[in-house]
Image (cartoon, rainbow, N blue to C red):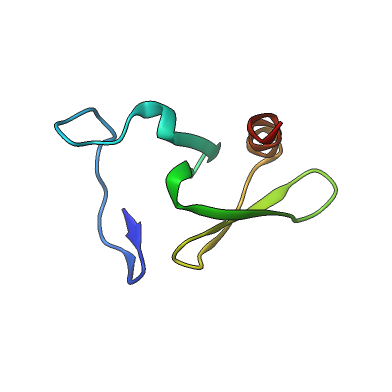
Length: 75
């Protein structure tokens, strides 16, 4: 789990009482599953990839496939 203070641990992504719906999350890289509610902007990174800026100011580079999924959501 990542927050303003860094990585605080690992949690299984599952449905529990009060947990966000699966549709609120998107895997943008093999190593990164993001909560779309916490995205502030999406910026070009290079020719094929984009970078996601989170509310915490963290910047995460998406894979090429993850970048395509983000572009598809934006349309």
